[in-house]
Length: 449
Image (cartoon, one colour):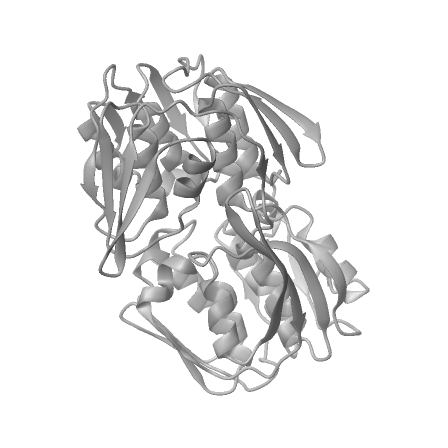
């Protein structure tokens, strides 16, 4: 069974000087998971550089090994995966423990559904509370069979289909994880797997499928898209350069915007338009963020970001932007707390089923630090201070790495220090976060309370 990291109190206080310097954020978590999975399904050896070596991705690496792929860590984010080809995964001898990673668990459901094997999957206490029915229900149409705890929760047993059927599925709510699980199952099916999404969500799966040689057609339907995958392709090993994670870049970027006089350069950040909603929103708020050396790496747009401290103003964030920044609302709430005026973030229903009820956890973060806010239906309304927010609170993180990092960024910008009650889970997505922030701050801005 997965061991829960020991709780670690961590506090952040206003640094003695502005943030400055250059930094590379960890590799994109979404792309790292997929690089390992597609490497395992490809014929040949895939070289991956810049892989995120956080706990979540290491769980995916371990699962791919258990399913028969040869996965080597060569050091410094350089990994090598010798794949088994489509349909070539083998039955694991033991339970697959996905730790804290909802992405890995849901994508793996799709991977397993298309293979004739039996497997059991579990995770840590947080992941075992998260709903899996949203993927197991559509995947059952392949012929795979799933057994779960009440409410579609882990632990979960799957008996993959011997001859999986292609899917034709309309995703009821925008979810890249559900879409990706359906496409992964479709790889092993004869014929065309078709997924319709009501709003465009992150398209890393489609980009990487093409990168490995699959035929993927994408059509536009209203605000959303229709994705058609030709089943049983021969995926051929291809090198993957993992860009810096825009969700991770959000934290030092917002810190630099809010700490007066700051200027930092974040190197090699993924700028996929279906992931960059936060940066579009910050630009609307008056953030001074410049994209430098824009380029394409492994099918993904990448740029260096120069971020300068800025006086932010409130905005109204439309609900259709939610899929492109669903993980960034807690840190946007911190930016909004320092902005002039009242910011409204619309349509945040999906936040209620993240690592924690992230909407409630964000509201509690604001309340603990003297920031005025309201939750109106699925909208979060934040009344900005037009300068440093009060701070001074202890934030309950609920084992959620993004809530913990948001609290610590708030502490850098607030009038009084802010404490995260448990920062241990930051390592799942952003190894070395405290050290990187302290280096940019030129001292111990993050440390023991």
